[in-house]
Length: 270
Image (cartoon, helix red, strand yellow):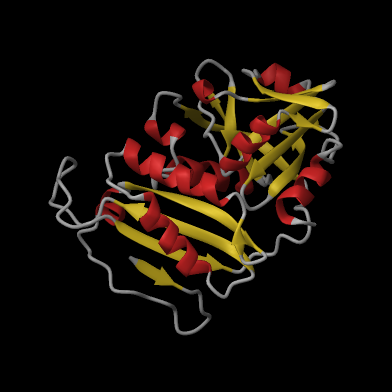
C-alpha cells in the first residue's frame, strides 16, 4: 500500500517496484471519488466498483482492505478528490505473467473544490470508436489511452470534451463522464451494451429513476437523436452534473434539467 499527499516542492515520491504490472502493462483498475465534509460521497458504491473491476481482471482484492486505505487517505481532509489505484502487483515478464507479490494499492488526495457547479462544455465526436465488448469499456481500468487521445484532439479543435460512438453509430460516453440526453419529458443515457462505462453517478441516477418530474432510463442514442436533444449533460463523481452547450455545430440549452440542483444538494449538501 502506498499513501501519498500532493505537495508543491519537492515533488512527492514513494518507493515503487519497477516490475509492477500496472506500470508496465496498465494491468489494474482505479477509482476517483469526491471527499466532502470529511466523507467520501457514495462511499459504498466506489468501494464496490473497485472490487468488481479488480475481480473482472482476476486481481484478488478484499473490500475491507480497500476501505481501510480509503479511510486512511482522507483522514484529516475535509474535502478533495481521492484516487485509489489497484494494480496486480509486481510480476514476471510477459502478458500472462503471474504476480509475485500482493496487489499494489495507491491512494492520493488532491485539492478539489466542488462548492460551485462546473461550467458548460462543448463536445466534438471522437474519431476513435468505442468497443462495447472491450473490458476497458465496462470497467475503469488503467488503460486510458483512447480517452487521453480523444480529449487532446477535442481540445486542439477548440472543444472541451469528446464523445465516443460505437461502430453501429450509437453514443457511448464522454472521455471522463457519462452522457445524459433530455428529449421532452424523458431523460436517457446510453446502456452498457453500447459501451457506456457504468459510472457511480450514472448508476445512482438510474436508481433514483427521476430528475425532477422527468423519468431517467437507459436507451440507445444515435447521432441524430443526440443532435435533436433539448438538453445534454454529463455526470461523473467529481463534477456531479455538467451541462453540454454544444455537440459540434449543434447548440443546446446551456443549463441543467430542473431537479439537478436538488440532487446535487442531496449528495453534497450545497
